[in-house]
Length: 330
Image (cartoon, rainbow, N blue to C red; front, side, top):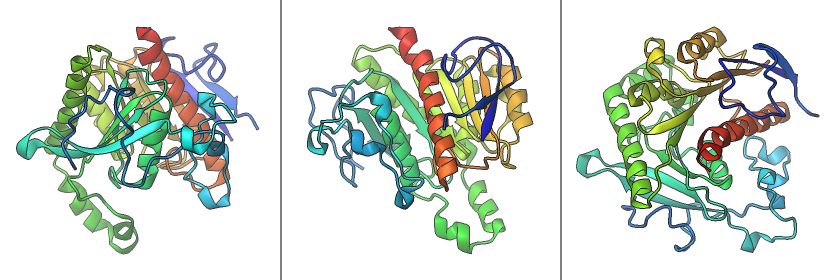
């Protein structure tokens, strides 16, 4: 499968290897709850914090995939982990369940932080409709952290996500009712609470780096709204994976570049809408479209072919975050 990219300007390149700047449209061929009492950046001083599913080791064994784990693969080869390190000594990411905010405004979240090679940069990850406890979303958050980041994954649905059984057994009108109950002002407030918590933690640690913002589907649409409201105050860069219900009217208010990743076979996220938003934002924003791919392929691939495209999408996102957040502050 191929992909093509549209971009505005030379800022925040995806990578010198994966994206050419010689043309605006380029066809690429792919190669064959408890309250948190610890300063979350004190990675090396604190013990490992385990998620409810336990800590995962990240070494050469992470690079294996089989028919049993399509859509569950965590590849850590990008970290260049030594091949002779065993699972027991290679726990690169710690995780903890926590509550952020105060009183009735507090929300549950998962925090994943790099234990080794922590780059001191925070990422706020906004989930799809299946919520912050969905295994595919958690594993994606884990993998981002595995590349050196501190990733906060908040509960955007206050314990009431859309579940797989609802998807299979309930008619569409019930989904419309459920989504209408996710009051936009409440969701926006919860996202703002999560961002402020991260900023306060960074300031307490003496770090002034801007945060990165990533979103899938529902969360990918919220990326546009959040960055338009933020005006560059907290966030320095964004990544939107196949955003849904996007408010295009606010795009011109966004002050930071966004990487849009989607498929050309996704009716929930039309490519022409993304390209229009990208033109409104400018600032080096870019749209990357994977041919033949539908909704959700990057964080919940359903075949080996989708898994390969998910790998490439992850690498593009990783380079985008590194160039826009890490390299710029070194």
